[in-house]
Image 1 (spheres, helix red, strand yellow):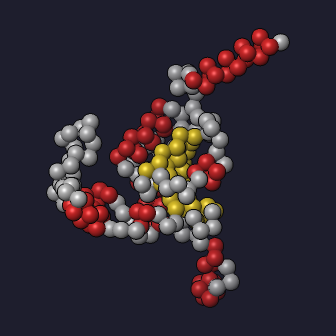
Image 2 (cartoon, helix red, strand yellow):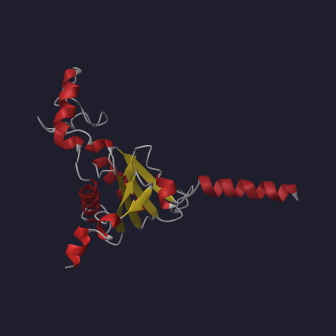
Image 3 (tube, one colour):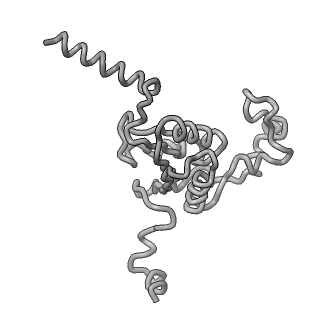
Length: 197
């Protein structure tokens, strides 16, 4: 009967809307940290559907104070048991240095030494000259991915039983890989043959 179908739809919508109040974790008990770049299709790359994970994106897919805040909430209070970090090749955070970005801001009349980095906490400011380090540009995506994994694994705010993994999305091949495992470098190359020795 139509009435029963409508009641079932109402019940499903209510269950969806009240997941946090009822203590229901996301479907995969997963938190994902990824770069905000539009060329990184996080859900497709990881095979995620709506409701499967909490997904946090920022410039570079980096473990920042706000990323730790979100990871802490999802692992300590929302039932998350696994974290995946996804960095990617050709990332914009690899295209300039922090010093260069600071120079550009200064040329636009913005003094990074005087800017509040969190308007909700006005006293939270960077130390003089701290902007280049805070912006956290990088040159090696594999090294950066491994570093983000270590930062979360070693954070006292993340439970030790939470699994933390990192992957690199290759923009050029549209595929995921583990950091420091470029298959092409290990297959039928002089370098690979020498390593086998």
